[in-house]
Image (cartoon, rainbow, N blue to C red; front, side):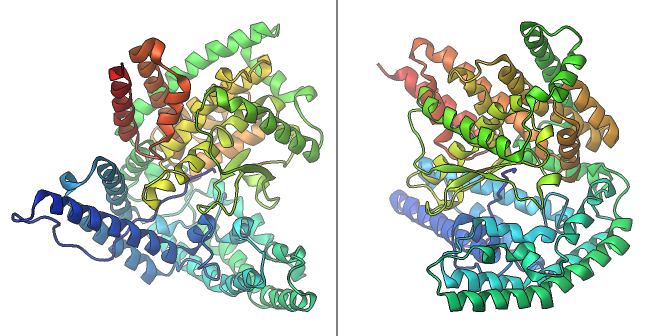
Length: 593
């Protein structure tokens, strides 16, 4: 997930100023802090109520019987709420807060400002893409408990709401058609097959029925029979008909009306929109042209490193020939999904004991490895991470793609596991959730440049842990580094420089050994999700620069374990916030006797 879980930001009502001329300083500070934390608490609860799926992912089961209201009225109400919260956070006297509260205030304000700014782009008119949406709403079952009869009753209630959810999405998509605000036809053509998977003759074959195929023994047999019968009836009478109608709408009305252009700049107010998402995801003010040039330079640097690996393994031929060798030689691929999955498990176990070399603090929350669900595997990326529940009731999970093992090379698996599992996303999310005395929105917050920049930086920690003893694994690390450098070039190329989809695929294939299956899925992901792919490399570069600065300033007193802990101890924050924190950390270390 790719992992991009947004904190819902909105407010209940504007608040009066927290300071008056006659209020003593201590009382002002208490008043401001009280108002701040009241806002945090209220907005956390508001977000869970308004977005039940988010609550489910957080491990909060209170709203497991419903979906997010995606009606036009609800969207307008939430947007008004977001504007109110911006005024409310602005009204709190930042200078009266403690240092820790000022950090939380700044992070919250950053998110609130952008939540309001993005409203003008009407992203709600494009509610789905090939990587997720109402067409595979059942995937949320992956994180639900299904331990008690109540859990299954909640799921049946959600099944009963599927038809309304589909209808609401249809309304939003029709609004997008009217406004000319539609996703590119090139990627939306992947979706009819996903919808078709929901249209089944046998309710027990529905993806929504999967939780009923293995029910816990603690539920009496008679009650199991009753629950299964209710689920089958709802799927037959409401779920399948809703998707059957949706399939007709999508094929006959929506897909023909989708944009022929792949560029975000061709959306309504498209240039401003792409500038916005680039700033949002990178948490910088870098313009598209500068990001493009950073990518071009990184591609050249990494190619030179790849040439060294090619020479080291004794391969005779060009780098392009070496890429072909890495993509096609059977020795680099497993024959079955089972073999591929076993290898992922083995790599994870190999990484775990080496973590103490680069960290002092190891998260308490465990993680596991799971296959990506079959119904989305052909259309999604090689792997992604799903964070654990905030209360520790569900572990984090590293999801791996077992579809077509013949296109999943062994040499990428180490770097991929370091990125998606440990010490990448799992460390980042688990450490964030375990931060003491920190508002909940920061404990689960996610800034893409920080989160993905950390995970890409974590791939290179494999050298510090002694995990890249095989030159082909090192080639895999370079391939993954190149993958993120290429992203800077092709994302800006397609969305701001007029590149075609094929031009982007060709550039990717010319500069990285990833297989055509992966490259095509990646390019389609960038088309569907403009700007998101820019965050990885920009974040990695900033974190690496901070490490170099800290090492240079502290000299023999620099300890990589302490630096890595310091990067994670803020939770997910904008890059400039992280920079201020690390500079302060270095100054404090330098003053120690």
